[in-house]
Length: 285
Image (cartoon, rainbow, N blue to C red):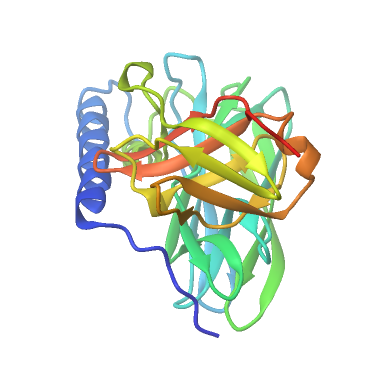
């Protein structure tokens, strides 16, 4: 089965690379001036399938918001993929549960994915994924158990699971993992700046298709991913219309919910990946 990946232009790739480099430079500067010695902030690797493995890494620090950061580091065999938060038609999402003490996962930061659009529409990652997770309520010396479920797809698509135990060592920052997690966070979409103007206007939903008019000039049209917040509602890849608008056909989900829920657009620009909430749907039938 041959899959087609969404093409990303050279300027957009440059924006993603430059944003990553800036984040890593700041992380390196912070690491150089950190007063605490570096300790090993990772669990042993666990094999998920031949050639694919996963571990948990931690920066062992507390940020300005009082959170510490963990991350799943996943290395995938050639030709194997795993899935984004919205996995698509055939994908299995990554699900992480943290148990033990008062620690809880407050946020998962998802790097911008690759779209596979033939013959099925899926959002995937290849080769290597670092998935940062902000943890609140962690206590120094406390142990926590992480249960991870995810899908791996090559010739066959299968669900796999793994269990890890992590001991929080707050205040003894692991410099290498700080940089690794910062680099992954730099690949995640940022919220679209309010001062940059609306990402689109004239939003309408009719006959199972949502149309966005007047797309912001900085957005790469074919990079756009449309989501209905809090659901696994799936829209097709955007089809650019003769008038320049983008049409997203509803592939799977409740059509009535589209006019009632919060719609989010994730996209690429020359400066990197962003996301933005969309205005209310103007029409629905």
